[in-house]
Length: 149
Image (cartoon, rainbow, N blue to C red; front, side, top):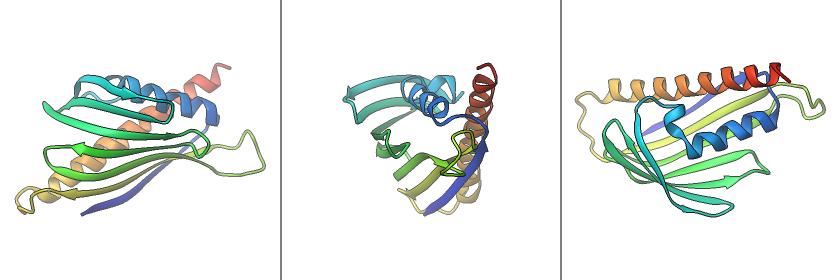
């Protein structure tokens, strides 16, 4: 099982970071080079079901949206290698300061469908690296957007 928490400090407002996470939901190809297609299958105020072509493979996920907690919970419905969840959340560094930076956190709880050991460690390292790259892109965009205000 791949269980990991990734975190990066972002010097930008909660609203800026939240809007980027929502944009990432609707336009994942802007944030992940590995996404060649994306479409929303179902959408309500607090739920999105979407399909992606990621590395040429179909990925279907149910995403619960909780704006009050600053959290997006991705549940993998179809994936060639994994089952599990990925939670993206925004955490304050200080509760009393509206200008304090925030943490962007990804919590990964992924279980391999196949337990073949060949290439297992490398694949997990690559997955973590992709998430870290995405987080740093979101950080850069959010900080750039807030610096223009």
